[in-house]
Length: 324
Image (tube, rainbow, N blue to C red; front, top):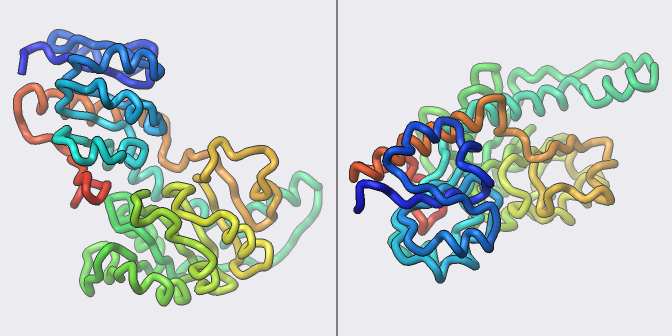
């Protein structure tokens, strides 16, 4: 590899949009590719690619132009946007921003659960209407939470909820009876049985061909009528029609939804108007300073790449996530 690395940054107009990029300018030749046309122009000869917009899907169309690419850093926790077969079967290394969003998403999960337990949406609605809505609310302590997805995000959520007094368990690809964060991890084959025992179900598993549509009518039917469903993973993990029906007929008590199959969520979506739903705009992991944190992961990996050292947050492309 040449001392000066040819780097394409996809999703930005200017390299100055990447905090701290000036630290590596002596060792890199940067091309910015804000769209497909520019990506197609700059990919030939590129050795590394930083995907700054985790939603971007143009790379697959431009992939035939790849000739020297060795490494892709994806600026997100989920890499579903680039897990197309041509990349998966290639020798190109793929890394992500694992760890950056864990704490923020754990706090967001706790916030949603407490909002449901303490009926904060009703309190806010009553305030707007100048209505004195006195009622009793739930104690959160001792409630059971099933976290579907036991990667770094799920583990941070489990640790935070455990400290508050929730009873936490997890669902992963394989079962294990002892786990430092979940106590017990159930296999995905036992998902439906576990759903019937949970007061809150938190979905944070990566989107892969195996998990697409993981939650549908059978899963919502398996949940308790008093249970709440929280999705911070990807909209495509869920059959949204089945979820709507479960919410409308009170098969489940409510849902906190930060992700949707179509984003931004269309104004005509019925999710906006359901009293038992909290809608947020795919923001659970973003916080003041998160771009700087994502850039730090990239800059560290860039130095590793340039010096032939092992990269951090390396994705196992056969499963679609970084193995812990």
